Length: 333
Image (cartoon, rainbow, N blue to C red; front, side, top):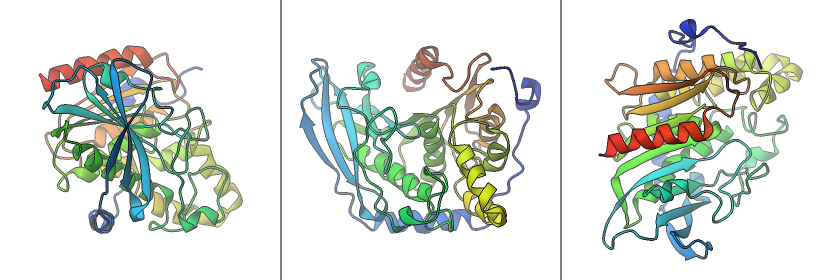
């Protein structure tokens, strides 16, 4: 795959043309307030994972509309009694779920608490999931997939529910007695990275304890450019829908603007380590740089971006995992 997006020197300065809705903050204030009216009801049931060095808990908590959301919590088996561990709250990529009980424990292997949120209505791809999306909009006219589900209104759009689930996942992780609620890290690849960006923005001024975000080749950034340029992956679902519903482009973008990571990134205050792959035709590098350059807005939020010049959407993989470990060890001391 050759380089198809802007040259790197232009990417470094690229900013999205989108403008945040005037009521973006009040929309999300009302959304989070409505979600928190439901008791969190986080439960942690220890389960057999067939691993000698990791303890795993099957988690259920109340997400959007009070619906039960599943997760895993992995803890190092050799943790000290009475200690409280920093926690990495991980969100997963498009089509995936939380996986099998022992499928991904890498952050716990590194000595952290590791909380993996299941994504409602997903788990039909490479990694299994256990959480349905019972919302009424699942039956609306939409393109096959999730990018246009409920996109007729900001209230019904699918990612409103997912972002709320993800916000409440932080609260659920913080509620465990062996988790340090003042040291929460948000992480994820692709869709998971986009959710991490969104939550970093949503927690700012609403929920304490998030100290870093690790968005890896993040999805859900700069929707207008992504729809126009991405030839592969979930973004073309939107283009395909609009190819038939030719009169809905402006309405669609108006709804998506409330969920665009670029707009939500501006509110974030926690330090961030991004990654971008310059041959990525699923999440074009310009969309990632749009998010990175917006992140923190006018605040003094520290941010870094790791560039993988010759990679497609797989990004840095094991190389970036080492980079993330180094980043957190320096941050946490």
